[in-house]
Length: 212
Image (cartoon, rainbow, N blue to C red; front, side, top):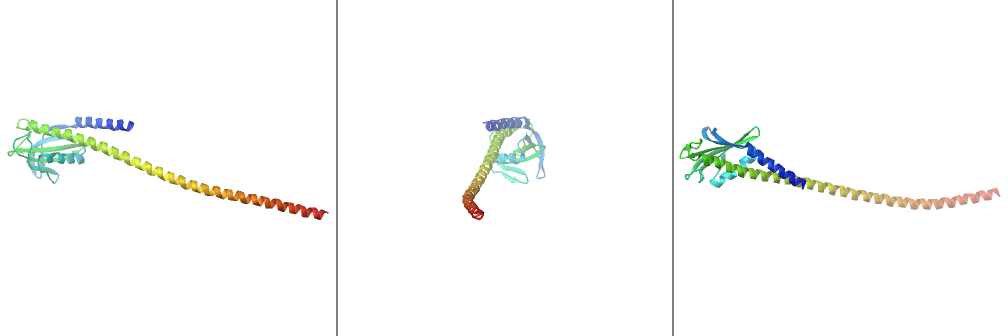
């Protein structure tokens, strides 16, 4: 029960940290030697996993192509942002424990990059919805990772228990062998004591004859 509570507390802390760390803002970035205008989403989710979540999330809107650290969709169909197909270019990077998703959207050749652009608020909401999805995925990953770690520890304890049980069994066999040898020596000693007593009587008888 204590373990479950710790996992739950860690999950709540992660959610709070992700919420506090998240920031959506206008940005510019050069991708494949082309300067692009768009939006940045900052979060505390590690880059490695954020990139996985982002690629999976984008796949709902078209065919994702990943090349040289960039994820692109030549025709992204995102109805909440535009009725037209969008040209989508993005990248996921990190610095100082903060990961950033850069998203560049072009509608008819025009970048959606400032609050005055049509579709900007929707693009911002698109990133926030992604963060909700990514946060849920990261929580699931952490819980599964913790479960797997606990399972490995449990398996290790089982192996250690089995090892000790085998050692005890081996020791008990050795002890039984020693007990059998001890019993054998007791029998031999009893026999030798009888022999010794008989010989001692013989010595006394001979001594008695010599005295007479």
